[in-house]
Amino acid sequence: MRLVSKNFFTVLLLLHPILGSAIGSNAKIVDQYLLENAPASVVSLISSLEGEALQDAMNGISPARNGLGIFCTQNTIFALNELIRQRHSDDRFLGCNYSFSCDPTQKRLSCENRENDYVMWLGLIEEYTKDIPGQETPHFQEITKGALIAFENDREKGLDFCFGYTFTHLWEKEDLGKASINQYYLAWSGMTERDEYYIDYSAWVGYHQIYNHRHINFPGYKESATTSILGWQLMPHLEVGCEEEGDWGTAEPFISLDWANNFDQGFMEHGAGALDMIQKSHYTSMLKSEVGLRFYECMECENLGFRYIFKEKLSYINKAIFGAGKVTAAIPGTLNRFTVHTLPGTLNLVSFGVDFLFVPLYQNTFYISLSYDGELGSSYQSHEGLLKLLWQF
Image (cartoon, rainbow, N blue to C red):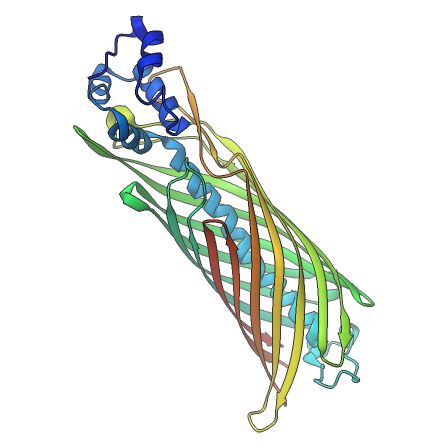
């Protein structure tokens, strides 16, 4: 058993089996904070723990995991924006009124000759993400499902509006916790084309509700701290690229930036008694930078009455995480606060995607698209499936 007298706290830091070792720094910070600020009943319980048992207890008590839900909201808005990016890439290749031909010598019609004034389309996504590297980040998985409905009027003026909703279920391994996340979105988007160059842009506003459960389980203590984290999101998106057409198809190099900004309210947990935590309102962001290359190929099947468009993408993605992995908290009733960290500062990923468009040969008001987009990195992977249904009128 460890001594816990605060009169000898400096000596304890030197003799402490966790604080004097190379085991995770979050555990050291949490343990030190509890010895100085927690009620005597909690100090008595943790004072009997040593080594791996103490490490596991501190990991369970640490509120660092509260940052995972914020990270997921930012990843989700990136995923939903992929639907708009793909929709714009469809238009660049198909041309207005979907006047393209698989014959590369035939010119696609300009949007100035659009026969149908309005477009409505529905996009559906399902995304699976697994793990984030780092000793201070618990292994987790999340599944997101969502929908986006869009209305377009004269693409040259960029009068395109979208409404979206997603639901995310996040769970941590070893039953450390879970979260359910509802997100609601409004987006404005547009695209400008000049010769072989284009600019793709959008602006997003989102609102999210994170229902978080942080499980705390060590000898003598088993409780769950629950809370609702409410917040807003703002995200601008910009992509610039060009097209190079050949007999074999079309190549499209591009570079894009997405900047997700979160403004989350403060909250107080309930249900874990003396180990509930309070967090103040805070701002976080994630910057996604991508550089890559798309390829388009076309095939006509008159017997089936469809044109088939194949799109492939290969890119490098850097995600810079600002603040989501930094959690500052306190035990209710105390003035002292402590800060723990989770998530890496950056993620370096390779992304690849495929997209299949089915366009009827004998009418130009409808098409279907099925897509896959993947992101792979060290100890991290994300897989996204997308479906688009479009109708012009």
